[in-house]
Length: 193
Ligand code: A4P
Ligand code: MG
Image (cartoon, rainbow, N blue to C red; front, top):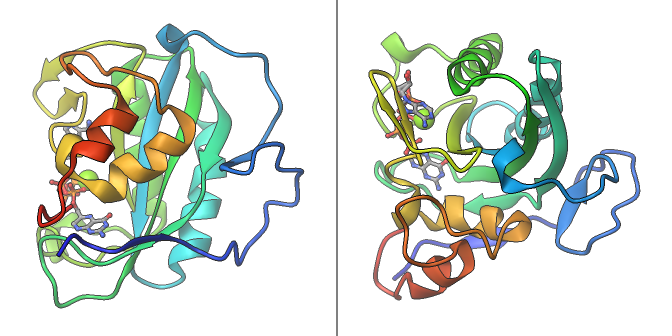
């Protein structure tokens, strides 16, 4: 069985119009080239997961050189990896960036920390108040200590690809042969994602 991945029933509102059925747009913007966009995955299954995800998405806008352009729908997802833990809420945010990937990652790690994330005390793939993964950055391929982009596990994970497909279905990430939507479709039943 593939892991469940259902849109929430929109329990929380950002208080802005949603011009697109498929995503929460924080702000109307003319289309930006992919070379100026980054995508960040958000996940939480401790405390108030939906609130953590929504608030953290807007807090990314205070990182210098970052504007939040849009967020996907929220999805409730069955845990992948360690099964014996609560369901997650997952989403993806689209950012306009004028900072480096490293500066963005540092900003994301600081937000995780503010939400009580304590890596020393937690189990890999176990429960967490907030996980922020940098998925894509300005069409770049990055392979440095502590920073790999595109995120190495995103291709196999429905809980990442489904919300990303709300925002960027036609994008073909660097090194991939298929678009986000095609890759999502190809995740066959029986593959855990
Ligand atoms: N790092 C390197 N590249 C990146 C990048 N592109 N983005 C480094 C973010 N971080 C990057 O991350 C460990 C280190 O990776 C960071 O300090 C950074 O320098 P982490 O967030 O502590 O590691 P993690 O999240 O425990 O591990 P991993 O493998 O990223 O886990 P995942 O893939 O995030 O899985 N099930 C559902 N349904 N939904 C979920 O959201 N999440 C997980 C965690 C497991 N199961 C889940 C979910
Ligand atoms: Mg992570």
